[in-house]
Image 1 (tube, rainbow, N blue to C red):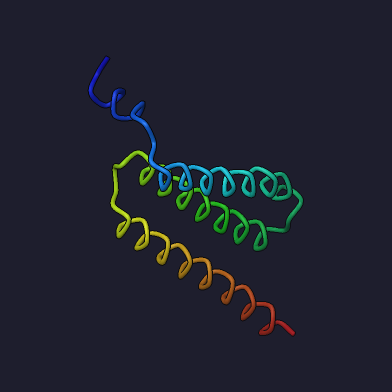
Image 2 (cartoon, helix red, strand yellow):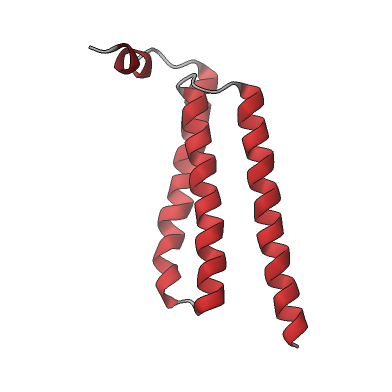
Length: 101
């Protein structure tokens, strides 16, 4: 067994388990919402895909934290970055909608 595989199989801490639970919740959200994407119009589809991609990246960050590959500080940094990008995506969609009215 290689060292990387052994690291992945080590016993998870309670924080690691919580991080994996958070990753699973995000995965569930993405899996349920991705089915709606094909029915959206071009711009709405792109915004939805961008939102889902951010959630996937955040889920991956939680997994990396649970494996001990990144620190809690790095997880928090990635989380703040994802939230900022999601807010930016949401506000640009609202601006586009109101400019058309």
